[in-house]
Amino acid sequence: MTSETSVASPTDPIVRKWTYAAAGAGLIPIPLVDLAAIAGIQLKLIADLSKHYGVPFNKNQGKAALGALTGTVVARQLTPIASSALKMIPIVGTVGGVVAMAGTAGASTYAVGRVFDMHFASGGTLLDFDASKVKSVFTREYEKGKAVARS
Image (cartoon, rainbow, N blue to C red; front, side, top):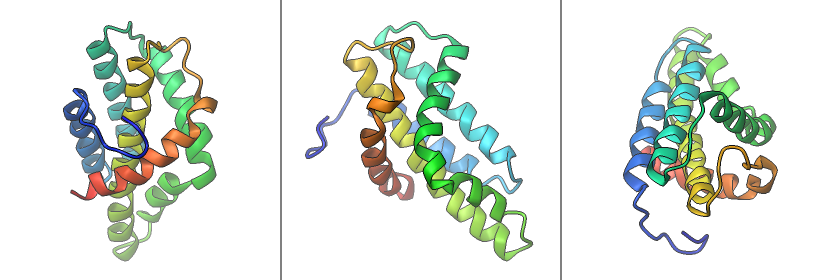
């Protein structure tokens, strides 16, 4: 998959399935519970992609790689945390937070899936994953993921 063209990948169904699941988890109205559910979904996405590529999966290594990726990129935006915290405001905040979090969760999960898909497809493993090298890919795929999460 290049940045200019969208070539169907055999892993598209895996990435989309977990993208939609994360968007659904974003609808959980309880702050921080939604974030925990989304992190678990993203970890399951990485596990499924590693299985597809025959890459050994270790839950702790997966958590570390996921944390490194989302920590370096999402820390700048703080969107997921703000969306989750917005749910604490009665009625308007809850509705706004749920809508914002569903989109953010879907887009970030799509980006996580695309990053790990590309990494595993190029022969990478969880042990050699370097989040600093894929920040721009994550950001680009996050933007594409917004449209996928809305579909």
